[in-house]
Image 1: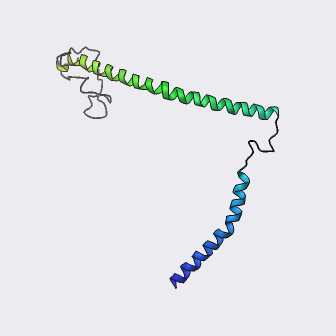
Image 2 (image 1 turned 30 degrees about the vertical axis):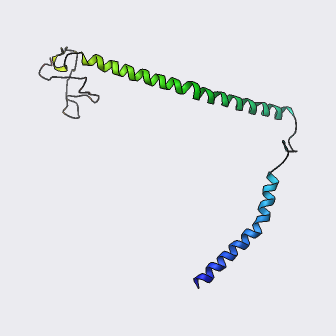
Image 3 (image 1 turned 90 degrees about the horizontal axis):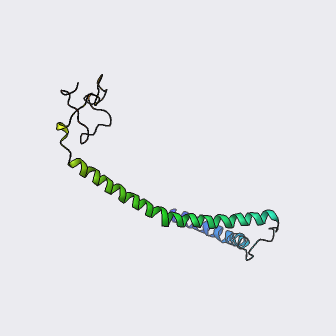
Length: 140
């Protein structure tokens, strides 16, 4: 029973494809025109202006593509290298400074009137242990 059903479906599908092939080729042939401009396009001021705008847009987009590839990408690479060098110089400078524990804490630094609602209450949200130091005992 199953092979008969499959054969029936296959024959129906093949007959539909055979019927639709001439229709499909007629439609496709209709859209494949050999003319440069279709015959229904009128040569007037509006259509000439649209063609000029289209040409200008094509040349402008190619200009911006060239600028993006040949100007922006090298600038981004140069900026990235500059940032990398500045980052390394910055941490080189920090390596010559005294340890965080030996630095003077001034009264205006790390003022705490009440504890923060996170962590141990002494460190801000942006606390960085490599850069920030706060000794509760030294606080004034």
